[in-house]
Image 1 (cartoon, one colour):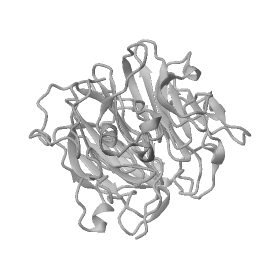
Image 2 (cartoon, one colour):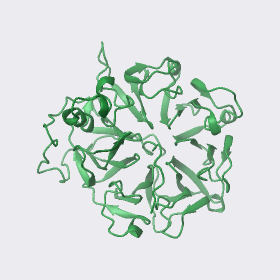
Image 3 (cartoon, one colour):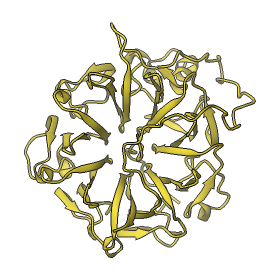
Image 4 (cartoon, one colour):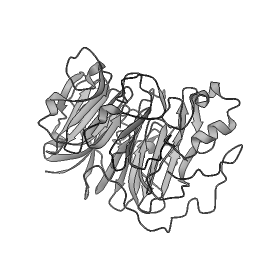
Amino acid sequence: MVRPTRSVAPQAVQVNGVSEPHVAKGRGRKRTKDTDEPSKAKKVKVQLEAPQVTGGVILTVGMGDIGQLGLGPDVEEKSLPAVVPSLTDIVAVAAGGLHTVCIDKAGKVRTWGCNDEGALGRLTPNEEDAFTSGTVDVPGKVVQICAGDCHTAALTDDGTVYAWGCFRDNSGPLGFLEDGVLQKTPIKLTTDAPVVKISSGNNHLVLLTKDGRVLTCGCGESGQLGRIAEVFATRDSRNGKGIETQLQLYPIKVYKRRKAVVFDAVWAGGMTTFVRAEGTGDIYGFGLNNYNQLGHEDTSTKFQPVLIKGFSGKTWKQISGGQHHSLALTEDGEVHSMGRREYGRLGMGDIKGDMLVPTPIPSLVKEKGVVISAGECVSIVVTESGSAYGFGMGTNQQLGQGNDDDQLEPKVVRGKQLAERRVLVACAGGQHTVLLCVPK
């Protein structure tokens, strides 16, 4: 089967530095004896941004030819949301490029979709096995998940991170913790402090520790790691890729130059990363900014954290990055967008130019947003009333309108399966959208 092109994978759905580890030369760290053993550390307070869910059901919409809808091998697309069968008491969801992840009330992880590079965290001997949900063997109780293009990460209630899959760059697979090696089952990521939040971009992973440090790993060619100099960021620019690639793949602290900054929130976008400073609420960003998706008026790529002045004056609850645009949500529920305007992904109507800085979306000013999600060329906003609004490119039908029309302004996701349900969380994947719902 010919696989569709992967696209920007959103970040974590449910969301509430450390000194560098030693990196061995050659093929990377050796696996320690406790790699797959449950941690005995005390529970930590994990950050949760999305509304807490006591147990809901999952609806999916969009393209499903690689199984990302979870509706079985006979369903290749859905233009209106459909219920994923045999899943109850779900408390969190995440949509990757071509796969989907969820957590149930017991803290168990289930996955479905494309498993070519290990994104499901479980073996799928038959292709049909990937079209329906299956359990991932993660030690401990998982309380948070995030998904990228070809990787997935899970955070347990004691602050331990397990992850699996593969990172990629423009030249192809990079590997996961080891250069060129796919990680098809969960492996523990070593940090010397508990982690309280995880977030995935397209091909990078960001961790926030309990003591306010930020760790990044994965592909850094667009500056999204915030710690790799431009001269070493791509394979072609390195002298033999060995240790330079290994230093990207292993979680290492992001430094803020000139003064120490403690952070209290992180958000990874497609090829961007945003972090929030504790106390001041200042937003720093790094990564690709060719369409002002960082909200910084200078469109150069940022390889180190830079203060984004466009975020000044407001308190920010969540930021979500797509391919060339980003969404931002204030504590009082005001939804902003920035970046590239094509296909309506900014929700601003038929505007003529891009948004250089975070700008309120006019048609949502009377709604209170609670969750935002930016996909490749689409945007999803969940409001306090339990409605999900979609806007942007309609080609993959992931806007839930029953057609493939582009939506230049926010429009309520519809369908009979939503008639008696409230949407609590929504995630825009590469070609599909995932909704976590409860009865009205």
